[in-house]
Amino acid sequence: MPVVNQKTIVMSKTSMLRSIVASPSIDFLMETHNGLSARIAEEAGFVGLWASGLAISASLAVRDSNEASWTQVLEVLEFMSDATSVPILLDGDTGYGNFNNMRRLVKKLEQRGIAGVCIEDKLFPKTNSFIRGEHQELADIGEFCGKIKAAKETQADEDFCVVARTEAFIVGMGLAEAVARAEAYRVAGADAILIHSKLADCREIDAFMKEWAGRHPVVIVPTKYYSTPTEHFERLGVSVVIWANQGIRAAVAAMQQTTRQIAADRHLRNVEGEVASVAELFRLCGADELLEAEKRYLPTTGRDVKAIVLAAGQGDLGTLTSDTPKALVTVKGRTILSLLADEFHRVGIRDIAVVRGFGREQVNQEGFAYIDNEQFAETRDLYSLYVARQRIEGDIVVSYGDILIKSYILHDLLADPADISIVVDAEPDQSGTRNRRDLVVTDRPYDRRSDFAKPVQLSRIIEDLPDDQANGEFIGLWKLSPKGAVTVRDALERLHERKDFSGLTVNDLLNEIALVHPISVRFVRGGWIDVDSLDDLQKASAF
Image 1 (cartoon, helix red, strand yellow):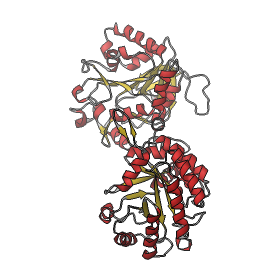
Image 2 (cartoon, one colour):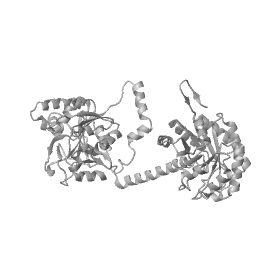
Image 3 (cartoon, rainbow, N blue to C red):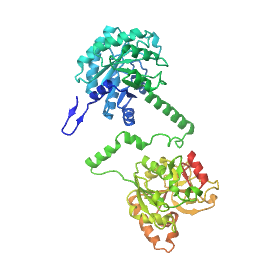
Image 4 (tube, rainbow, N blue to C red):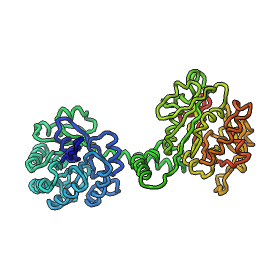
């Protein structure tokens, strides 16, 4: 029943489902099989959900033959109901037994906030309709009508919906039997009729709807006749369309592809950018709410990491950067800056300040704080960092604005306990197409067989060092702890006293610090691109 307060009327889930079923316009329910898929479907805009017996069984790796007990299904439903605010219609198979099982099922569904149940006129234990359906038996009409009556007389909420599904077409009994059963189920009290067909076209549904003549709401499941336009269902007068198994099938296909890729590659670099981020999983599971609750109930909170992106330069990509800052050059329709921000977001970094200079009026996307380097034409990147020095505090990541990275690099960088850490590619690009490379000398070379119990430290960054003397390339990404931030600010102020400060780079700053303070090196092998040339831009499209 609707819950009333002084400000608004909030419909219950059962009221919402009844409204969907009774509406003169067509509505759609999406298959879901656990709490996460239910939340995703609601976010996609579905007004109601179908808790599919096939999908729930498949998610448990058992057959759709009542091998998952009804109490196991109830446990899944509880998570789905807790995760969503839209109504759920359970695919209740045959009701898991006789009329008495049906009565208990309805009680348990109502206790868990499930808005309705659909039961089918087959024998328990059921077999999926698409597995030798012509050899399956249907329940006695009178016995099935008794189940419907038992369900309706048991429900405590008058809006709880019972949908009766007839499998007459599935077993080959024809139109007359389908209509006769549907009419008996309507008279017994069903709130809607689900007419099922396994044909690849819609002719059985067409024939039923013509004969049925709109006497009661009709639900369909176009799994086999999926090519039929939705407009046709509307013209027929169908009330609800159920997309009955596409969610679990999509999940299976994606998991198969990803796991095969990982098994073949023996690393994650080729899949990390193609799968949902860990941050997205956290969001879907309500991590933000927990963080807010921790602020309310716990005496301390976790780290709050910020970022500074140095993006004041024009770049040298020909006509692409004649009027546009390099950070706004697009890769497959997205700017370099927005793609970089995506990776920050994946690891939970959302407080991002961008230092802009050339074409700064164009660098105005929402979601960033902006700091202007008014002297960008006469200065180098260290000056951009200097104008942002007030933000160098706490835990912070600093990045060049013309790089693309995989989020696992950020994960590794943030995991480094050192006060100052930089990311170095142990296998730098030697193609000769790069305009500039920040080559690095470390206190010992990269060795993938070593566990690096003792951290590798930076000795020096030198542009255009001979390759045989370098241990890697600084990719333009580094991290500071609160203590490291103080060290960097102090070094910035010292260097600012120099007359040649405007010509200094971040490399000069790191070299200055390395003389007196250890700088940890986090080695990677690929997983990033410095967009410094048109050739790099072409590689970025594949990246």
